[in-house]
Amino acid sequence: MTTNSLQELYVDNLKDLYSAENQLVKALPKMAKAASSDELRQGFEEHLEQTRGHVQRLEQVFEMLGENPKGKKCAGMEGLIKEGSEIMDEDFEGAVMDAALISAAQRVEHYEIAAYGTVCAFAELLEENEHATLLGETLQEEKETDEKLTELSKQINAEAMEGGEEVEAKTRGKRKTKRAA
Image (cartoon, rainbow, N blue to C red; front, side, top):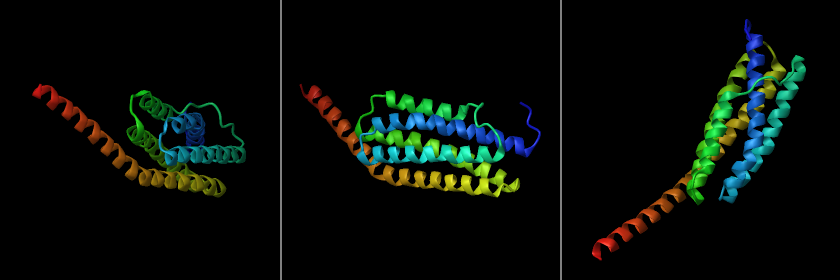
């Protein structure tokens, strides 16, 4: 597709976001299931509901535009979700898995913050004020989710570090015992 106008680029970016959000709706339940922290699991479940709302907002924008939201696959989100799936396939346990999940989730949030920031700017330039308001609400929610993940990561990362130190201490203890024998 040759894009010759900001309007066409705007619609193309919206389709990309629509695909991204729908991919995330499928991925978040898996992330929630992989989380060992109740607070993280609940956060993923809450963000799933919020993401469904993001899809609905995008559908509203497409309806106002008279455009079909389908027809594009967001390769960026596909890659981020693939990385997240690979993390879940690792042998990480407990807080270490949770720290890895938060890392993957924050990459997703940062991608979405950038994408929503772009479409908000386009909507404003195109004087699509209703769109800008709807998309701006989603942008704010994405920023808030990122902040929640940052706060949650402080405790979880500390727990992951403590767990790693315990494993390392046990391993060193086994080595010392073998040397003494």
